[in-house]
Length: 278
Image 1 (cartoon, rainbow, N blue to C red):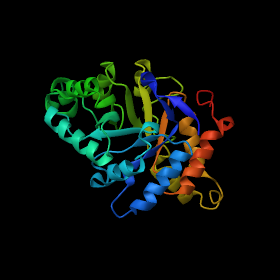
Image 2: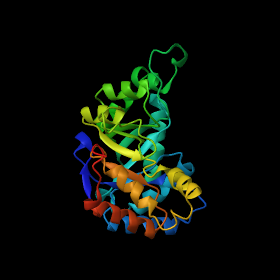
Image 3: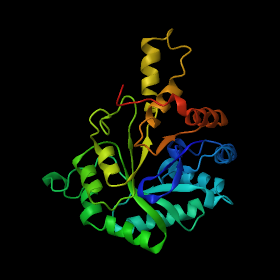
């Protein structure tokens, strides 16, 4: 496993991280914990989750997986709430499920952040974060040591996302970026919310790093014979981590085999692409 520095946090993070968004109560807890132990032993150290993933089950599983290994792990979770009271309740629940007394990275769990000032968006998440006490509450949690670093997740570029970046208060951003979805980072022009965030020394964590199977399904549908023996997953993951602005690419690891092949992509540094040249 290769490592990168997560922006101004200074944290050394595995460039492939575990994304716990697909964990559901139907999944066997022991198997998940064992798989995570194997991943940690193989060098993964970045674990991303949220209270809403599996109704809290994802956090609970991660909490059991990091027991006795807490200092070796970087645990990122989120709050659905944007107000002070709601944030406090979300954090308290996460701490209990994760069985820890601190969170490494706390993120506002966003979708599309509208521009503050839009007449129809006065109660928007962006407004609550910037002017309704949300960011202030996060900064207090950071000052108290309950949270080490703060950030937000966003589904894509928007006026609100640009406003959150412009504050200079956030340590990282989790966002979509992959071969099919490049509006967050134009490698040719070096424009977009990812370059904007990097300019503020924010760390960049990717979700949907391999297109959530959209590209794979498209290519196999259109070219079933030609794609039969092509390792599309490794190609797509290598594409995403070839962007030097990316610090962590999250993957929804489902098995030990997933741990192995993603780790192999990370270690094959000679396969990295020169995206701007391409």
